[in-house]
Image 1 (tube, rainbow, N blue to C red):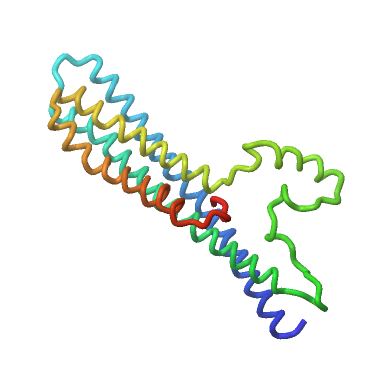
Image 2 (cartoon, rainbow, N blue to C red):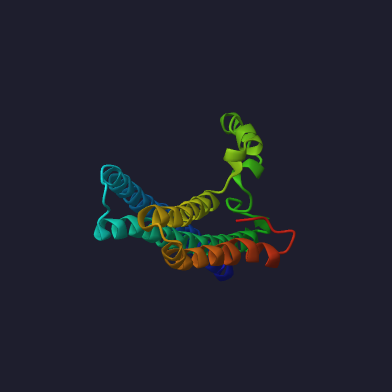
Length: 212
């Protein structure tokens, strides 16, 4: 193996390790955000139970009641933004590894084909592995990308919190102005997220490229 091939191999190793590291970090980060959302939802349930047995709502308790979906919306928005950036970096590192893989040849022949195609697109010679190919090629769940699934979960949670916020505000204070004021920032961030992370990339992306 000459110096050029050795450098390509090192580049492939580095890009592969980076995109695997980002994959692991995305799952670890997702577990943190899911845990925080779970705590907020549990706390919201406790406060709702407290409200159901109260005839007069203290200002402090009402403020806490409204603050839960407010911070839930902000936290889910941050998760969606970070997850989207992780998707982009993951795709970039994967493309780097694929480029090095295609350029790396020994005696004029390809020596690496691990990242060029997904598992359901590869030719599998092992009879045991072929058993899984129909599921990967026919099932929607088998073909879904994990990073896209985590991003969708973050957007859904942000949407749930944004919808809950004005409902909780109205239930607590019975004031339309309070509902509007506390919902302005989360609603603006949600619209920005949908536009910048969902709609804008689809408008700018070439038609022959698939979603991440």
